[in-house]
Image 1: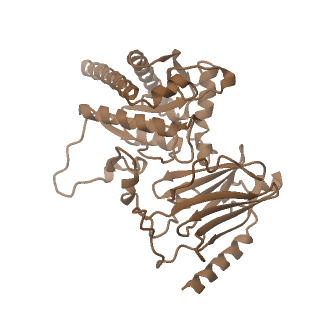
Image 2 (image 1 turned 30 degrees about the horizontal axis):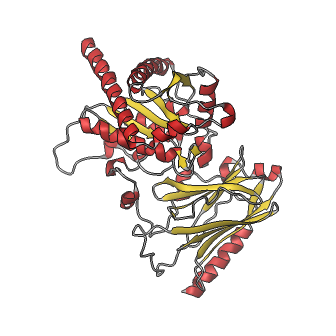
Image 3 (image 1 turned 180 degrees about the vertical axis):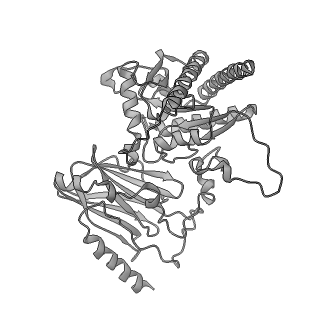
Length: 456
């Protein structure tokens, strides 16, 4: 068994060495079925215990220590130059700060869960590079299994040629090569994080029309308004970071608390775009709201401002607009719209939401409701937290562009501001602010339902 496995690995390495650029579809040998599972990790996911870089600006090697071998696929992205490596879901137990310091051709790297069943490693390049060699080593002589990538310097023309859309694997097929022992999303829900519920797992794939009860009596349709809560960022995209805190974790905790508060009233149904550290592309966040016929979409974020640009504080509420209300709103929208680039998603094809005048009219009505909710929200939140001096703004946020779902993006505060950060990590502040948002939601729907009733 061992000799046959070694032969398969050597054959795989030879094939990989023949590939000129990193965009080629890389598929490696899986772990032997007889390999014992890690008794410490009940989930059965491969565990990464260490990662390191070696080499110089001509050749740089990346080594990831694992408790079992995995398959992987890689592709390149430009502006900024990156290498994206998709692997089956991995339990990253790496030392704190891993990936922040670069070496040679790698400025640094990020890693995390990108969807249930799949993880991602994103390498920031210091210049054009290709994967000259790559292989997986099985555990031997007391050493762990290892994923090894050897980057080599290349010219700009060759790097650009490797970026062709045809050579890029799509996100889901790239993850679909998970090992047979990888738990399904349903089996992995125990790792979803505090407060997660089975109904929230991977909502983008849910199809209400396919969900039928087993008996002959159809369930009555739930007419309660549906609210989608969207904690920003996730997976390899940490969002803003300061003083040991990162945005993706702060806004997830807030989003879960808001969901629980809203559900407790019994007045609404609630879906979250993510309930754990999963990367969800911006377009998929919008699709979740539209496919579920959401009545309201609330995206939760926390901003950051470099010290050279001053020390501002307070919460801000954004609605979508073709023209930004000011330079600050334009800066933030541009930064948030690049979230997909951090996760390695192909942004070359934008959806065309406005197809005719009917959709345009619906979009106008939706923006009216969005602005109304934003005003109600600002009025309630000012009683619970500090607000930015001009709390209502607008800009071209992609995540707010559903033409038929009223949507707002809430920046809870600035991670870069000491006082705001103290609030963001405070459970007492979170409870008060969540309460104010729940009151705004009640006021918004009370007015809409009253208007709908009078129209009938």
